[in-house]
Amino acid sequence: MKRYASLSGWMKNRYGCRVFKVSLSAATTCPNLDGTLARGGCSFCNDASYAPNSTRNRVFKPIPVQLEEGIEYIRKRHRTSKFISYFQSFTSTYGAMETLLPKFMESLEHPDVVGFALSTRPDCIDEKWARTLSELAPGKLCWIEMGLQTSSDQTLSRINRWHTRWQFGEALQKWRDNCDIPVCAHVVLGLPGETRQHILETAKYLATQPIEGVKIHNLHVVKGTMLAKTWQEGDYTPLTLEEFVSQTVDFLEFMPPHILIHRLNAHAPRALTLAPEWSVNKLSIFNAVENELKRRDSWQGKALGFNALDA
Ligand code: SF4
Image 1: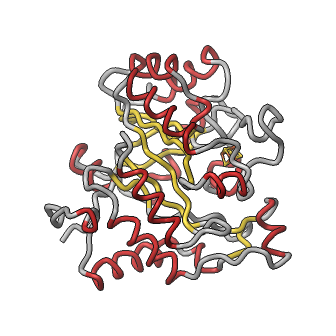
Image 2: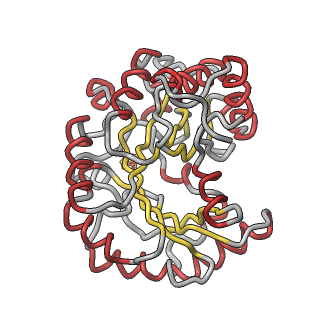
Image 3: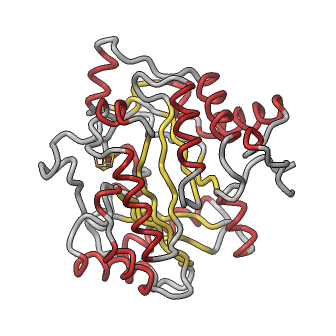
């Protein structure tokens, strides 16, 4: 029985094989780091922790070279023939459009690349980006990943996001008014001061928004972040695996089934991870969520009254 609508399953149906994201860097930065909004960034952010080991050495290489190296790395480990160019590091739409668009276009020239995904903040996309991207590559898949993290303004302030829930909603609405490129909202479970109630509020809020995907991350403490200092001083305690799994399933129960689940966890390289220990084992987190769904006999959207998903 299929208990949630995964992006990977959707891709497999559409392309007939697994589709892997290849992390690329457009050499952008972020307004929350360069002083435009703030310096220091979100309290949990260390960009090195997002990039797979394989990516770090190639960030300043030309896009076709980054792409070839990334594809080769993935092909050595997985039998697959299709890829998505994934501009994940920092804020990928933060910069001059004339500089960034050629990089996005270059990433689509590879015959095995079926589309691209851009990771960004709600204050770094606008109507012009929406209209331009919608005309950029007809026939290719395109996703925008927009960071929300939580629907609580209090927590957003506490983690130094420098945007509010209202700004997220407004950016989303403008995006929808100007293009039909799907949006994946990024949320984090286990943020400082948050309880199960906050998670449910975030899920209920997103269920009402014009989004097509959600990416769920567990908060992990990585070196070189403000959160690391807070954790070392004893002022932050990460979720246990059991708490994270339980909250993830709670969250899924409030997601309408048309919203694709892009991911169910995050992990950083072991060398950068301070806590929790369980966060470095991606497969065990994934299995624990699947097991909890089965144990509860639950599925995506159950709390909203949706029936179980079709297999
Ligand atoms: S918006 Fe993204 S890149 Fe910028 S500081 Fe926050 S997590 Fe890091």
